[in-house]
Length: 309
Length: 315
Image 1 (cartoon, chains in turn blue, cyan):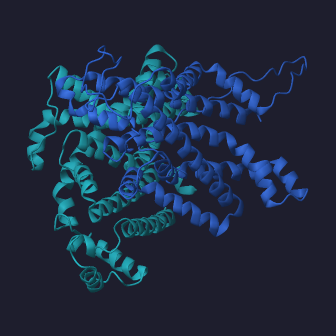
Image 2 (spheres, each protein chain N blue to C red; image 1 turned 60 degrees about the vertical axis):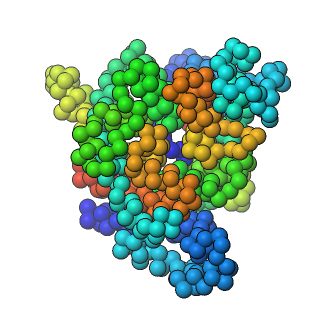
Image 3 (cartoon, rainbow over the protein chains, first blue to last red; image 1 turned 180 degrees about the vertical axis):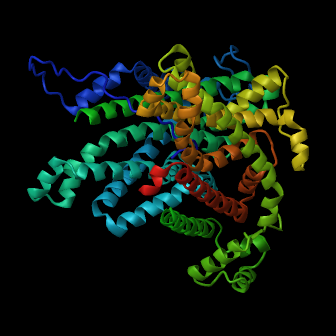
């Protein structure tokens, strides 16, 4: 869950009824995932989004190998404007901004990815358990979800952040632990509808255990909504990490988050040190937007798959 | 209708109890027995133990929870040991200012989002729709604090049109009188919500436009304007009611960040200061209040929906 209300897109109905030509010509049978992939690739924004994400990963993780800057010991040049030896200037401690953006980007992508994985695993498991067992177990789990959804997640994460040493791992766990609510609800809904479908009944009649039913039939088919949620979760976690950093509860030296950098930059905003704000801000918005684009297209693509099955 | 109300109320109460348990556990985990905090680092362990004993912090967890919940129901949220004031008084002092900021932002975001969403829905897949959609995505992908920073940078520092800090007046009326300094904070908080609300409004408009009663209204020969105001607006606004109830936690979070960015002395600002002070009673109290506000908001949204839309009462 983010600190923002979720965006809702209208469900895009598969525009063309797949070659139901009158000649009785049957096209090659396509798997659901192939349909999904094709619908995804047709969305231009999604392709741009994937491009930006790939670029960001290369920039942040391979970039430092090509562009060397010392992020352990600062230079003696504080607040130096771009051009004088550093392409994007230096910050108020003398660190090279370009190298620092790469370092902050590593943290953002790592926390985004890890927390999304944690949230998805917890969410998928609780959602499946809730839907399959039903009864009071379901009621209790769903009330827990209601309770945690009612508490502003930013508050809880901030309060807990004051009690831990912030590292990439600890912050990922912290964010992940409070982000499984949306996937849990989504997976529960999916499993509840899937449960009544013929192939699941068939498997059950053939004597599949509850465990086998979940692992082989229910979870794989509910995976679409989980993957969609992962992409939004990465975007949300990056925003949350930046907000933590901005409020002063971000990563510690030698790591840095984009939020910390923006927090530093604001100290000198009135002096016109724009290079400490705009490049970082732009990187942050671009990466978050790319994940949102991908999530949006992935949701539409999954809808197409659901429609066609 | 009555059974619906009762069932809904019952669930709300269960959720509020859950929230109180979570916040109590959080307080217990983060702070522990407060003797050390109260008496300071130089007090002897024996004195700290004695203090905790005297104030009931050695009793079983459920007894402590019982005291916590009874006190909270009486409006007593404990004491800020760092500021040596009651938490209720601390929060009460600034709550009005936060309510003003959040209320204004909510009002303006609905004022902008509803017409924007209807416009986008009726002009679907045209250039203005794409432009607005892109705008919504950019705003939505921006953390609240960054949006605030950029507004300060452009409108306050570069152009000098507006003050860069929010009103420092301590009175409600004073803040309203000082409205130019509130434009940027309110705009920041509004922009974030408009991005999300207008998307919902757009999709809701598309849903309603596909309904038969809209076709009938068209077939009757009603003008587009009449169709939009009489038939579409009310129906398309229904999901927004739920959305506003659901988005209270996000409003509170946005409020926190905005108050920090603009140095506006409200609850969010108090929360930020309490974080640096490790002043957990204040932090937990606001979290509890925020949770209860959310439940209340959802309840009111559901009830007003049920009043407005008979279809809901039947389920």
